[in-house]
Image 1 (cartoon, rainbow, N blue to C red):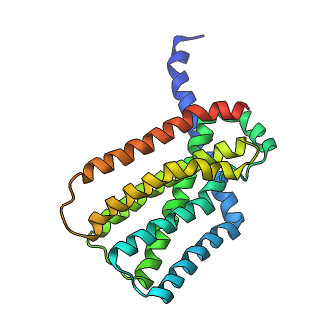
Image 2: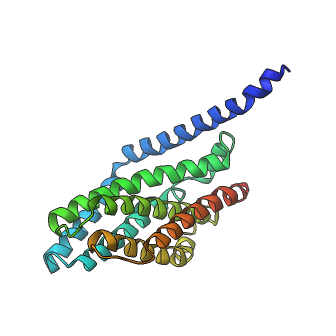
Image 3: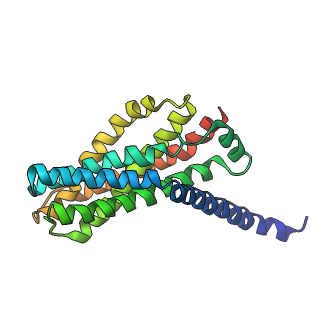
Length: 233
């Protein structure tokens, strides 16, 4: 074999992995679009929840507004992102195993879940602004935190969905494992978002942001490392 072939081989592998990644994300988006009942069901849940809060309490104060937003994002993640692996049959898993690498499959699922969560977060923000007011002082900062929160929740629940799917489709396992991971994450996100609501100095804000980003990176790395062992089962 020519030495130039060895130089071109890493580029070929990278291109092939990128093609598989895009194809997997596109496949999930097409399935979601064809099965619109799930997407519109989540939108209906968000809209009805915000409307009920408005009917019962009107426009809440800023801290309650912030807490309600993150609670709704949690339930959106449970209802939409958590099913990413549970909806795949064992036969389809075996078929995917012959086509792509486990790490590529896992990252594609996380990326698709992030797209879905970011979309739901934007829909939630629009509905909150219409019905529950807009107490934000720094809108751009809150949108950035909501985007990071979408990445965090999608990464956690995608990873937990993979574990539950390989454990005899046991969705209860996802709830048990998710509670100790999601609770501190929501607390950090809520504290970070407070800066976008109250224009006061908050010591340690950047430290919380770094901790959240490191936690996201850790979950993604664990998913990439552990999912191949789950898939072999």
